[in-house]
Image 1 (tube, helix red, strand yellow):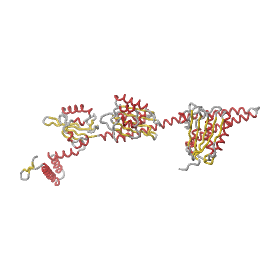
Image 2 (cartoon, rainbow, N blue to C red):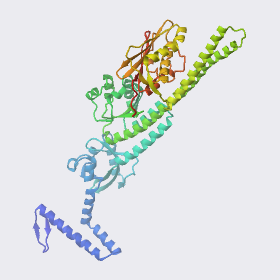
Image 3 (cartoon, rainbow, N blue to C red):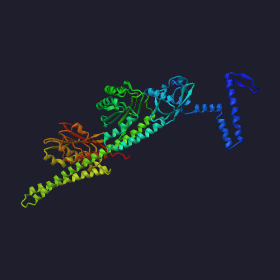
Image 4 (cartoon, rainbow, N blue to C red):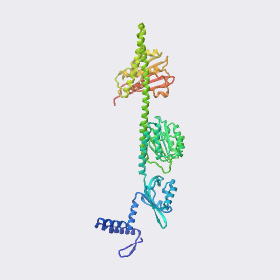
Length: 588
């Protein structure tokens, strides 16, 4: 409109701003005139007037324009060549483009590259069909849009067509359903992972696969799950590719991780989003050249790395790798990965507890077999000796020897039973201490006398070496004797005839350090870390006993607030050392 009609039929030319203000004023008057009568009528007459007002061409067009402008959905139009000719504010928000930047451009700019050819074909066929419109959710195939930043997103769309001057125009309403699909996907995925973990039946490999396979299908092109031992060395590695053509790259990565001294955990310590993976970034993370090559060989566009807190420590982790254009990761993905990691940690902890229970059951069965064997031996001695003692013409000296055999056998049986009872007390936290002042030199001399006869029978020398000035300490005397007794008996087992056992004590700061050294065969380095474990015995050493003595000794030392350790060289002998505070530690 070039001018505005005045009351007396005159026309006056206005500048654009004045014309816009005049049109706005006239529109306001028109609206008041249309709707003012509604205040005087009600019922059917009022509704009829409302319909007449809404269907008035000019007002209807303006109302539609207002609705389109404020719509959250993307509303756009394209011409017969699929060039964009209309782009509302909702479309700007969803796609990230400004209207001025896309008008006249091909609709392809809003479509992921891999779908563009097929989409052009769909539009051409729809234009040729008699069908006028297709509504949201009538399509069975998924729809994806492409934002200006390259991110793909799922969408729902309606399309209609009109013929103008022999040419077809298309009108589209598109809705970004990212949030809804993500919510649906996450809940479905978590439920699927949860079911798969339950079906894994306490198997480590099945548990890792239950984690990796659904995630690779839904959220990653390649997914890595690694479960490491406490020292960081790989224990289990699973790499799953969502596409068959990526399987060789995934297998190469798996093999590389398995041969890494620390596995793939060199590149992650905390939950991390990695937008770009470069050699420099991997080098800073400590990855070897081989691991760098394997990771970069995937052509990753983005990675998400999340530790799995197994047993309270980050001994496992997973990596989501995106190789696809448009698939990016963000904070929401990190939160989802954290939820999956929590489920994985619970499952792996359960697997660990199951393995521990199985090991405990096996250890119990083995212990019962050893206990039965160890009790049978002295019991057989007692049974045999009592038959000999029934002989009436038995020499008195021989009788005394047999009585000594009974005494030693009974002592051995009593010791075995006492060890088992101590283990029960330790596990129940009921290992009590009765503290008194104890002289290190005196208690070591007492132990030497207690074992002198046994050492003589084994052709061993046992001696005490304590410098002057070692202070007395507060300790449970009987329990201290028990620790020393266990260490001395252990030394006698593994020291050959003609060997020597030395008992010592010295002061170090506020503690007294006791030592039991032997000239025996020594302990292999791989066994030294386990000597204080319950029921543990080295396969390379004599396996007499049930493997409780050193574990009990450690528990008693710990109860005193001390520490125990072992130092050994093969062929050079072994020294057990334990330190006890001179004064008892203050209660917490």
